[in-house]
Length: 591
Image (cartoon, rainbow, N blue to C red; front, side, top):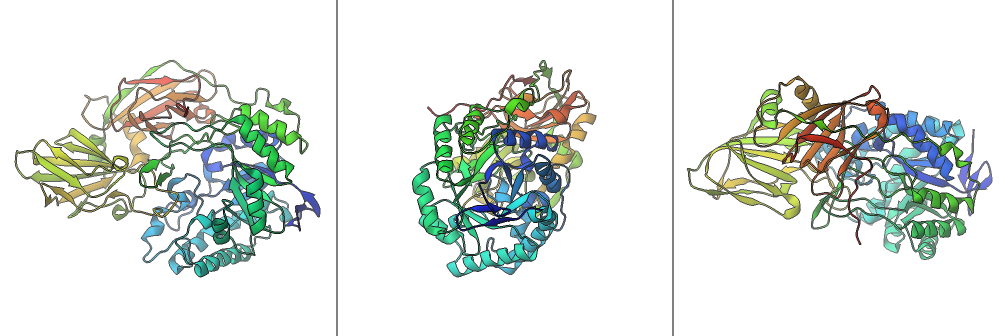
C-alpha cells in the first residue's frame, strides 16, 4: 500500500516529496506482447511512471458492448507497469484528443437525440457514466493505496480549448465528472491539463482539480503562467511535447534533440514533474487515426512515431539517450545494460508477388448488406462509423455528358460509371463535382472515411456524402447502399481463385515465410492508397501522397513464421509486388 497525495509544493509519496518522471505510452497503439518491453525501456531511460489515455470508442464501439480484452486489456497493461516497478497515470477522458479517431468519442454517441458533448446534457452524461463505470471498475482496484501502480488520474482533457460550453455549465460539468470519479472509488489525486495560456487555464479547471500544463518549450514563462493559476501544489508539465504528429500530404515532423533535452532540463531544474509526450508513440492501427480541420481537412497518418525517445519500432533514439542524460542530473537512473539486445531484430524478407484476389465490386456483391434508400445515406444512417460505403444508382439522363454534383464530401469519393473509374472527389481539395462521360448507366460511389476530427468544433460531425446528389441539376434517387465489411475481407480473399484484373478498387494477397523472428517493415511506395492486413490485424492506411511510406509489422504478429498479407487497394497498384524495407520510411522533414 502506498499513500500518494498533493502537498503544499510537491507530490507526496508516503509523506515524502516525490517528483513524477512519466512517459506517455498508449497500450492501444502497441501490440500487447510488446507492452512490457516498452515499459522496461521507459524505466531504463530514468522514468518512474507510465501515462496512458483510455479510448472510449475502442472499448465501447457499439453502445453497451464493452471490450477490455487483447490489445484493450487495460488491467493487464497496468499490472505490467506495476511488475516493472513503476507508477501509472490514467487519463480516461472521456474525451482524449490524442490524434485519435473522433478524440475517442464513439460515433454512436452523436446519434443520441439532443446530445451535447462535454456538457451536463443528460444523454451525454448517461453515456459517459456507463463508460466510466466500466473503466473505474478496472482501475480503482489498481490504485496505489490498494497496492496498485495508479497514482494520478485526469479528468477531461484540454477542456480550456473547448470554448463552446457556457462558463456555468463548464464548471458544473467538471464538478459532475469529479464527483463521478470519486463516487466510483477514485482516491488518488485528480488532474486537468491545458496549454498554459490564461484563457485556457481559466476555462479548463476548477479548484477541486489540480491544474497542469501541456507545452514543449519556453519553460520558465509557461511554468510562471501555470503557477499563477495553480498557486499551490506541485508544478507539472503533464504533456511535454518532444515531437509532433504528421498529416497525409505534409512533412514528417521532428523536434531537435538538443532543444528538447534543454527544455526537459529546464523543467527538472525548476523542480517540476513531467510526462514526456510521447515516450513511445506506436501506431494508429486499423482505422483509428484522427484528423484536424481548420479550414482544410487533414487526416493523421498511420505512424504515431512522434519523433519520440523510442521510435515506432521500439528502438531507443538519440533523444532517448539525451533525455536519460538529463534525467541523471536530477534523479538516479538504472544501469542501461539491459538494453543490449532488448529490441526485436528487424527482418527484411525477399520481395513477394501480390496475387490479385478480386475486386471490391465482387466482394460487396457477395458479402454486402445492401439496403434501398431514396436519398444517399450517410455512415450514420447505416449505423457505421468507420471505413467504406458503396452506393449504386441507375442514371437515365441520356447519352450526353452530364455534371455530377455532390453535397459536401466527407472524406473521399471514388466515382465509377458502369464499373469504369471516372474520377475522385476529395474533401481536402473541396471537390464537389465532376463531368460524367454520359448521363446514363450504373453509377457507383465508393465513399471512404479517412478519420474523424479529434480537435475543435467539428468533433462529432457525420461522415459520407452530405446533402443531395444531382446530375445535370436533377436529384439522383433510388440508391442501393452497403457498408464494406472490412473484418471479413481477409477470409474472402484467402478463398478466392485469382481472377482477371478489374478496374476500380482491388484486393491482393501474399504469403511470406519469415525465417528469423523479428519486426517487419512493409515498403508502400509501389502501392497507391488503401489498407493492409497481416495475420488478422489491420496495420492501418497507406497512401502514395506520403510522407509515410512504411507500415510496421510487430514481431509477435508473425511469431508462427508466416506473414499472410491482404491488401485493399483503392487507387492503383503500380507494381503487384510486396516489398520490405530495412528501416522506417516516415518521409521527408521540413527544411
